Length: 126
Image 1 (cartoon, one colour):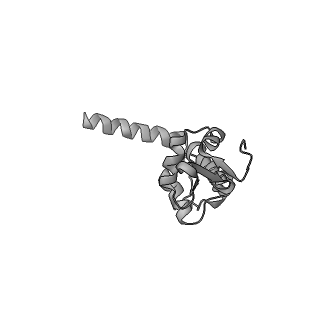
Image 2: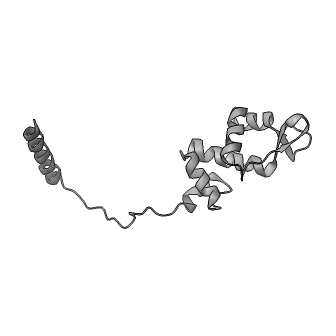
């Protein structure tokens, strides 16, 4: 980090490192107050600890790369399941509710029959 004291980084440094605007970091502070608590210095300037920057990197990855919603990340935080690295999210995700559903093989004849039935239904509705 650019700061001589590597334990703290200014909002400007973190913004450049994460490649997100500073206003996005301030928004995330409001959305994830338990995870993101910057220290404020003279004049109300925000300074982020190294562990907070790591959480911000994970949150950014979950939101931007993995397509999670703010609510989804909040749930991970609430449940204490925020991964140290967003790549771990697949390991922590619970199995889908319908994981016991089996997939049947469908033949071309079955598809042709289904199409014919749909076309008949369409003709009846017109």
